[in-house]
Amino acid sequence: MSININIEVVDLKFPEGCNIILGQSHFIKTVEDLFEVISASIPGSPFGLAFSEASGPCLIRSDGNDLELKGIAEENILAISAGHCFIIVLGEAFPIQILDRVKAVPEVCSIFCATANPVQVLVARTGQGGGILGVVDGESPTAVECEEDVKARIELLKRFGYKR
Image (cartoon, rainbow, N blue to C red):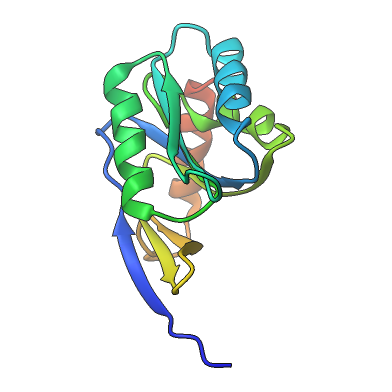
């Protein structure tokens, strides 16, 4: 059997200052469950989410409490055009605040990335559709941290309240 496959690079687009979570899930109920988790975990923080349905009408399902971020989530999922994937676009919040709860949603299979960095999604395209192979999250490292870098990292964590 011969399969034609193309690999495409999709640049995600989201506003500076926002964070995203990109993952794979398996059921239409993903949208409702993710909405509930995000709303309960970071009340009042603006967000939008979108999910790509992989069977039936194959629609992009979406929700959120911010119309702009919801639209951005929809545009990114449409650009990826792969089955059963989702994106959450967070404003005024960080993935670390909800990531464990997102991973605990029964429909969520895996997380590709959670970041504010530029993201490129590697998508395989076949005659059946598209699938996410992986992501390029940010840039490549340039060096190993030195003692001064360690101190700066610890100070940053203290400022965020993660270290005393």
